[in-house]
Length: 154
Image 1 (cartoon, rainbow, N blue to C red):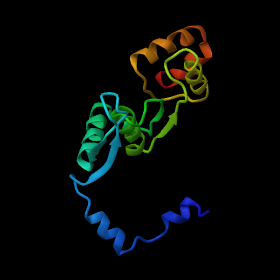
Image 2: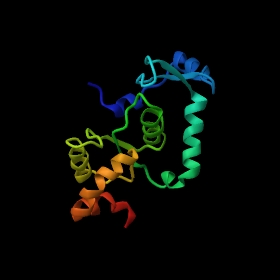
Image 3: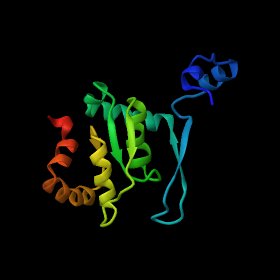
Image 4: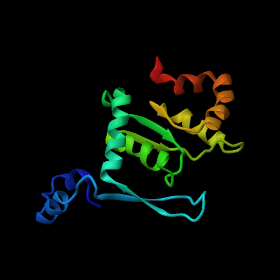
């Protein structure tokens, strides 16, 4: 296996330069395959412009992201634009770290979220409203968890 540092020292060839030059705002960046919650799963075209403009809007709303790379804890599915574009791309665009939470906001799985949050002090934590509601009892009764979760606020 070649170390990443050595890969960075490789010179790009003419093929890479041509491919890079061909990328523009309307170039397809990815196909987001939906869950099919409203019917059959489908591939949704996401262009470079869509993904980049979303990140530009986020950085304008949250300028703190430029101050230091974010540490994100998130379980949201990548077959939805919230998890697969918004959250993932915040980490990618800002040189951050994304921890994939194995839990979910339901009994028996929220405990996995709590275990992750005992290990990782996020600068950004994404969930759905029910997820925050399920987390509150754990935060209320566990001072160490609270301190770890809100460490960035101090």
